[in-house]
Length: 364
View 1 (tube, rainbow, N blue to C red):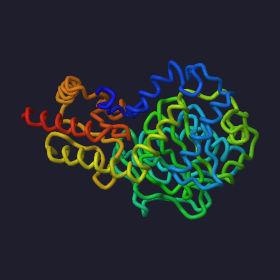
View 2 (view 1 turned 60 degrees about the vertical axis):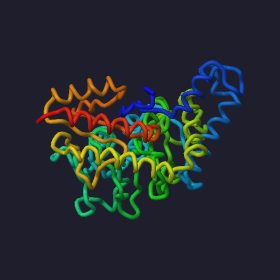
View 3 (view 1 turned 30 degrees about the horizontal axis):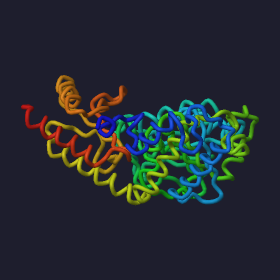
């Protein structure tokens, strides 16, 4: 049950059936008899893993044929640099960035090392507790691209509508909500997500990018940092994280076969988040949700109690209940419950029971 009651912001929970398959794969893969940790990335077996993982992502997300699917490394932090290297370096263009939280703010200084960046909106003055309205965004029709983070893991705010201007390539960091529900890939020139939330364990980063956007470098780049190197080698330019990609494959099978696809997964996630927010709001005098209601995330719920002492009591009690990973991010403090795909409705119900019990026993 401990794995099912893991509310950590990342690495997050994995489906129980996937963990069982990975346990067996550590000893011997059913296909080969060898441990997944000793499988060559040059083997036919691993080529088939890459091919099926890509096919499953294309099916689940309805990825158009003119998009590449790459399995890279370095997490989103590397994409903060790799993206502007490929698009801004050596040009006189600028890029627009939306600063909506901790992670989108971290992307901006990395991009500025490669070219001009204009901040289209900055939520820092009010603590990143909301997202911009369409009227607040100061977007440039001649920008090389617009970058945004679809779901801010730390502050718990999530875009429900896709921002941007027609004709301006749109780039999204979807690390914490990719595969949480359907999306229109064709609205984006590029989507990237590291895999320690909904995709699998840390170690692999999925990059989905339009062919025309991938062929844009104006300056020579180190081969490892050039998207074209990875496209031409079909994600085998250098030694890939075999175990992490195999785990991602199993997660996509679970979503496809066991969960019935992303529309069904989205409804489950909606119900989980609704139940948790209703419980927190019911005790609004004790629990304060960080995000304004209009922009509340379905993946990450950041909240706090009136004093650090109460928060510590809450966490200690949660541990006794078997509830894990509820500490807030170091930059914000407080508490956080992450409801990634593998967090079951039963686990959310257990957390809600503890929230009710703690509220009943706490006199303010």
